[in-house]
Length: 258
Ligand code: CO8
Image 1: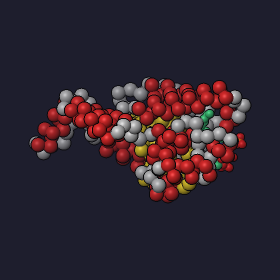
Image 2: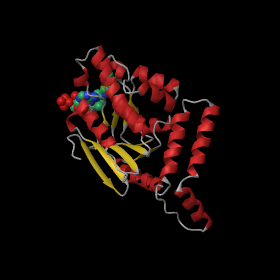
Image 3: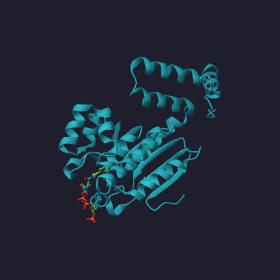
Image 4: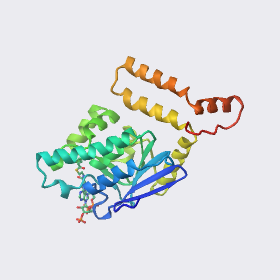
């Protein structure tokens, strides 16, 4: 599928979605949100891991497009927020791992996009922040929810109230990113991580993702019950038989995703 603002390539089980709007540092307008949505809808079974990154060496995504938002009224603002939030939620609910390879500015909607991914790795020049209150708005693509979830309410409140951008070393310290690499290494490291995931059983990964995602909003008993149910379901898969047979026979498993 050809897009105006996305460069998409699938190879060896990994799809790389590169957001490419150089004139605005990859800021997200409605067209780009629509393209991301379409790309997610059209990921085939040959995609085992999705990597989202930004084009160029300066920016992952510099936020939602301020020129598009500037003239909006309440209803349209609400609609724009809903649109972005729905696309990001779709990313979060994908049954495959999604890695954000944050290669520069991840501000506002860019930070929110990265937070909708399962895992964030960043280049040394990356900058994260939620500068919205400086524009008279609040994070509107689910940033108030996900930032607090990832780094705790106190830190999320500080970052959102001050609008302060943080460098990748601080993002690492507060747990917003998993690892920081030199820009030149970032995509290789993302692919390395993806390859390790692809070597494992895809249904088991999907079940683990479901448990981790959903248990956040459950109480302990509900979360444990959900895990138990998903754990049981693993035993209905050919991959469970294969994984355990391979271990017992001292060979490498060959998973089929069944
Ligand atoms: N929207 C539109 N255009 C942008 C954006 C953006 N978010 N970010 C950068 N650009 C454009 C600039 O206007 C500039 O365009 P031009 O060349 O035509 O003047 C071009 O990109 C290059 O930018 P700069 O010249 O500013 O580059 P610098 O290296 O000097 O600075 C920064 C880079 C620090 C990233 C700076 O561009 C900046 O501060 N950008 C805005 C960052 C920001 O505030 N992002 C948050 C936006 S709000 C948001 O994301 C809310 C999400 C929820 C929405 C809910 C909807 C209701």
